[in-house]
Length: 174
Image (cartoon, rainbow, N blue to C red; front, side, top):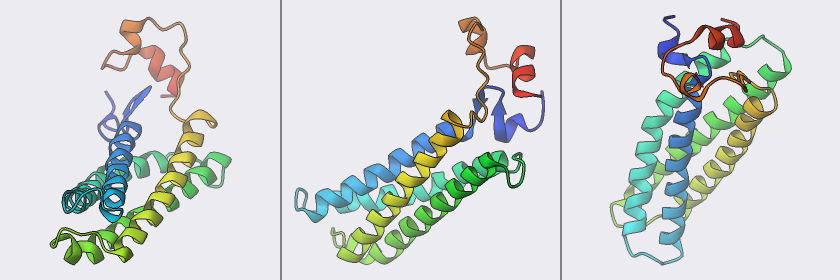
């Protein structure tokens, strides 16, 4: 076993993509919770859910960003995939900044069971950047094929196995 498996994942089973699912889901919930508060569907529950989700999202972002950065460091500087991944990273870092600002500047209104207009706008900007970053992340995997092994005839039990089989290591170039 390689030490890098701890932060990059096994061949064909990278750690970064599943973490992005959690982080994107949490921020999406925060955006929806803010929206339902702003339009008056909830009186305070939406604001509480929004702020708590932002805080949880910011925490999960740390792990998501670190694993993505570990993958980014393996890319060839200036290559097409590096350009896509760098733009993805910039979009996601920018989204995180806006979500963080929403949590900071929206805290006072959250304590009163409300999402302020300014915090809502920051949340929407963060969500827009998150959507762009997710789109670019999809391009990294589904267009550039990063960490995709394409072992179409690999038996199901070996494809899902939590150990690095030689076929997977060879397919990943390791």
